[in-house]
Image (cartoon, rainbow, N blue to C red):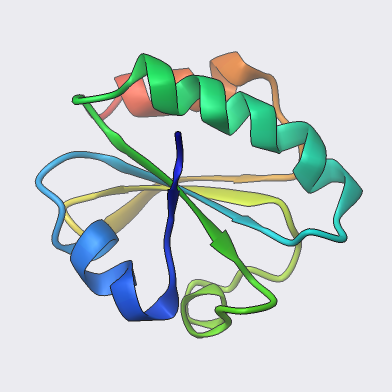
Length: 105
């Protein structure tokens, strides 16, 4: 299951991770986010142990959404060594997310 990431845990979970990290910025009221959610869960299961996969509820956690310029949701960011290496805005097929992770593994 994808981790729930908050503003309080973002630094530790995402920026200090020794593995690639996928972060799905979403909100409960967002229709496209509900389409991406199950894809992110599948990616989380497939990459368990190889990458960290998490979700940030932008309504409750706005600090890092603002810091990384997340203006539209869903936005999925891939981090490696604390730096953004990939950004997907909107709904994308699962392969787009897995290719982004594979590129940094």
